[in-house]
Each structure stands twice: as C-alpha cells, then as structure tokens.
Image (cartoon, rainbow, N blue to C red; front, side):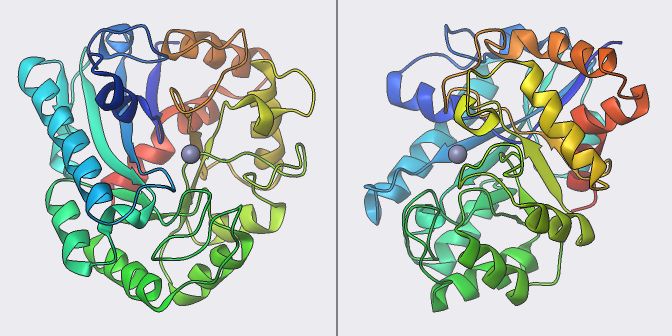
Length: 305
Ligand SMILES: [Zn+2]
C-alpha cells in the first residue's frame, strides 16, 4: 500500500532553527528528502517555545522559525506551505505540504494581536501550553487553571479557525477549555493512559470527549508514553487498537513527535513510516482504517477548517 501520511506533530523545524541544520536534508528524525516517495505527505511543523522562554524572546523564536520554514520552502520546490484547503487540494505526490503549528501559546506573549499575527503567518494549530505554566494556563507539570487571557485566546482561536491542541495541557486545563469552547478539540501528540500511565497521555474519558466533539488525536512515538518497559514500534499499534475500541476510527491520526523525543530503536524516523503502516495491516487493521489513521482523518479535519 503506497503510503499517504499526515503527521500532526514534529519538532524538526525548531531543531533546525536551533542547530542551523537544513530541513531539506539532515541527520535528524525527519527531513523533506526522506518523505518524497510517499503518495501524499502533509507534515505539521511545530515551533516549540520552551518553558523558560517568554515575552519578546518567545515572539522572536516563533518569528525566526517561521522565517526559516518560508526560506526553506522558497529554495525547495517540493516543500509547499499549506495555509488553506485549496493548498491541500493542490498538493501532489513527491511534495511535502508543510503546516505551521505552535507548541505553547507563550508564542503569543499574552497578546491577542500577536495571536492573530501568528495566524496571518499561517499557524493552523496551537497547543495552549508546554509542560509548565504560561499566560494561557497550566501544563501537565504545573496544573494551573485556564487564565482570563487563556479564555480570550481560545475564543479567538475558535473564531480564527485555529485548532486548539490540548496535548501538554493539565487535566484541569483540558476540562476548562472543553467547557469554554464548543468546537472540535485536538491532542496532536498523546497516547492512551490506560496502557501507559504517563501524565502526557489521555485518559479514556478525555479521548471520548475529543471523539464526541469530532476532534483528532495523534499517536505519539515517545518511548515513555508508549510503554512502561522498553518501547517498540509495535506499541504504537497497541495504543491505536485501544483507541479504536473506544470508537476512534475517525479520530486517530499520527503525531510522531519526531525530533522532540527519543524513539523506539525500530522506529528511527520518517523513513520507517511505511514499516509502521505495514505493522498496522499485519495486526489485522482494515486497510480503510489504516488510511484514515495515517492520513484521511487529519486531512479531512484540516480541509474543513
Ligand atoms: Zn510535545
């Protein structure tokens, strides 16, 4: 089966910005060159704002990484920025459609104007927090509430059609946002807490809430989220199988976390995505469900924004 891939989260852009490496060809988990054989490929590139970076420094980190993505797209015809559903329609085999996303709303530095500026630059999805606390609320390691600014920000994100990403949110923040909003919610890179009790993973109740709201959950390849023991590529299927049993066939997607984490030794980067897809088929996952998880659910969701 020729692979169509839509991956909701990687940190490769931030890593390239930090190290000066090329997004097109590098020795990281992902580069553009390695995915060009896919039948279709849409990749979300997150700008990650670490918890010690705030204010103007967070703004310039966002702007610098967004500039880098634009520069790389300008010099590589196979790398196309995706800002609209028309851009998605125009994507062809042998191209990478790049979606700009943000990991931690600290990138907005507490300003709704900054937030709309980020959207004008192409941001389509944003996690409210990383692990700590920021202007919007608390992450998994600092479970503060949804702040008054956070409340305004999620309303503005809904108005602007930016996907509210609740990966990294504390449970308290997760439910506060669910109450504050009515549209679909996403968790771009989180696994099942029922299988691996890590605070970054989703409880069944959280998953079902996202399912009922017509949202998306991306499967994360980080070993500490996949397994309490030594994680293998096959663990990704275990988490998928669990979520499928909760009625997740229209919810699940990929959320690799490439270049934001270590990886299982048999899942070394984007070059192993075809092998992961084969695993799902070998475990008896029907081909149409595999297509939905690897591509269609996320594609349809982004297309409908
Ligand atoms: Zn993350």
